[in-house]
Image (cartoon, rainbow, N blue to C red):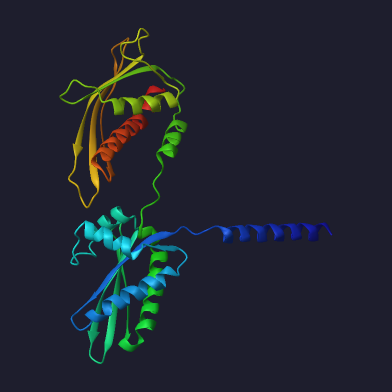
Length: 309
């Protein structure tokens, strides 16, 4: 009797775990379908194939289709041409502008006997990886051809997700929690921070503030360099911001930071270090701020284990 009860409990537990796994939603990918183009003899099929493939992919529960109007607006605003739309650079720009992780575009070739060959290019906007699917048959069976092609596209996206997309980025909050958790030492000296803009007299308040906030969160005491209570450690240095040209509505800034970390009482230098960090955003000011925040986080991750020893 006891054996039967145990087996029943195990069976119910297995069924519960199976049901729970089935209930978990699959992660979805945002997909943009650009115009299928054709040679002169097949040009008239382009809009039909594009519409049918988009409609078919909409039924796939693991795909989120970008609205056609949104894609068209983004492309027109950035003055993208038809040529090169399937290149990795163009796909990356579309991904940055629209948030699409996968771009589908293709070509239609018409041969003798009203025979169509439809090729779909599937490009990861983050990785630049390209995969292709193809169908061919009579033009009279266009609906069946596009249904078959759509199934192949959906299958390729599902099978190649790891190649088409980058791993999910760690949030700043999670990253800082991980950095602080991984500090092994228990020492928490008091620290002053003085970062100047390279070649200028003013302080880089964003970098100083963000670095100070991370140090405080990790249990270090942060003091003003002019305070009566002198710090155990002095962090001094200079930072320089470099803005990159606007690329498809996306701004990129790199921040280079040179620092010296020194024991105030002994004068011993703990570390000379240069950190360069890059961030992107949809505006120059936002990109500049993001790069300053990132360089502070990157520097904190490098120096806190040393200071905690």
